[in-house]
Amino acid sequence: MDYDYDFPKSKFYQAMMTGFFVGFFATLVCLTYNIIYRDSTGFPLTAFINVSSIIFAVNIIFPIIGIVYYAFITSFKKADIAFVVLFLLITCFLIWQTEIVHRTSDRMLNAEFRNLLLGIVIILGISATVFIPLLYHSKKFRETVL
Image 1 (cartoon, rainbow, N blue to C red):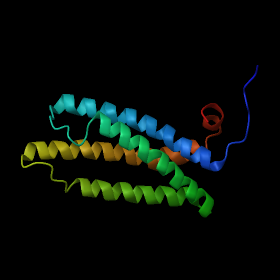
Image 2: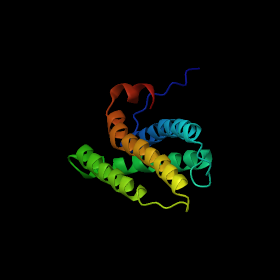
Image 3: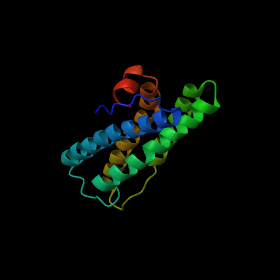
């Protein structure tokens, strides 16, 4: 029996699944960064940024970003530009807010926490801003992954 159904996928499905796919790889990059950063600095605090929080947060946020991308492509003529500008602004805002985070009274641990958080914010910002629109419009991605 041949169960290979070639049905057209809706724009909503494509945008959401692109967000999920990008989120999956952003999770892997964030986890790798987390491990490398902690090994190189010896940063001990794991209450907020840990394997569980990275996995769950990123994989919940990115399909939602995919849905936001769908809203943009159905609402605006220049949707990609508007989406990129919006998420670039959000990323810049989060980078700015990361610099004022105060995690602990120890200056060294505070600086290390900020650097860890900053790296994760940058990874997620680049993933959302660049890779969701790029992969959504990739015919090869649509054919092989979606």
